[in-house]
Length: 277
Image (tube, rainbow, N blue to C red; front, top):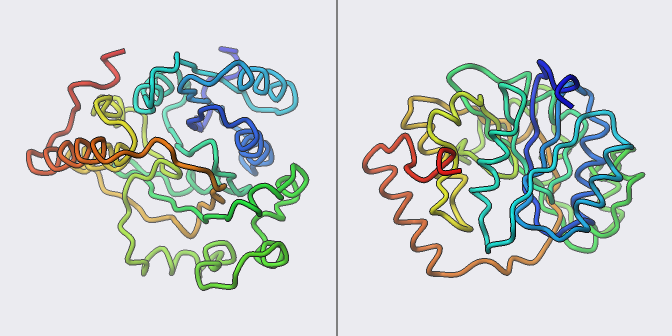
C-alpha cells in the first residue's frame, strides 16, 4: 500500500456509520473521477462488519487506494475518527465529504484546480429526496445520470432555481460562486484544505458531537489567518437522504458554547484534537 500512495495529489476523507448502501454509491462516484491520482480514506465511526466486507469487495474493483480507518462504536465520535483519518492520509491536500454524498466526476479535479496556499475551499451539496436517493443505481452514477437535471425531474425532482447548482458550469458557475450570499464556511460534506493547516490547528475538536464541529474547525482556520474560497457551484455532490437520530438539544447547546468561545477568544488550536489520539 505504501508504494501506491507515494506523492499522490489528494486524499478524499469521508465519514460513515452503518450505511453500506449509501457508502457504496459514493465510492462508485469516486471511481469515475476525471482526476484519478488520489486515495480514498473511510473514517468509520464504529460500523459493524458489513462495512468492512463491502470495502474489501470494492477495493478490488476500483483503481485508487481505499483505506479503512475504524474505531469502536462509542456513540457519535465523528471528530475523533476524522482526526485519525487525517493522520492516516498520505497526501498534503485533504478533501472532505460524507459517506452519503455522491461526487460528480470533476469533484476531485475541481478541488485541486482551486486549491491555494493560505486558503481552504468551501463546496456545497444538492439534497435529494429519499425516493430518488434509493432509485439511483450504480449505472446511474457511472453514466452521471444522477447529476442530470432532466433525469432527476423525470424521477420526481421538483423544478426549482436550486437545480442550477447541478446545471451551472464554466463562467455561470464561477459567477454564482461569486454572488451567492452563502458564506464560504468549512462544510463537512464538501470542503478541502492543506494537511499542514489542519494538523497545525490540532484537527477537529473531539469535545464536540453532532452539530457544528465542521464549522468550528473552519473558524479556527480563519483565526489562524486563512481565507476561504466559495466553490459550491463548481464542486458538486448530491446528498442522499437519511434519518438523523443523533441530534439532541444538550449537544447543540454545548457545541454552540464551544463555537462562541472559539470566535470570541480567537482560538486556533483545540486542546482535545489530533494529539489526543
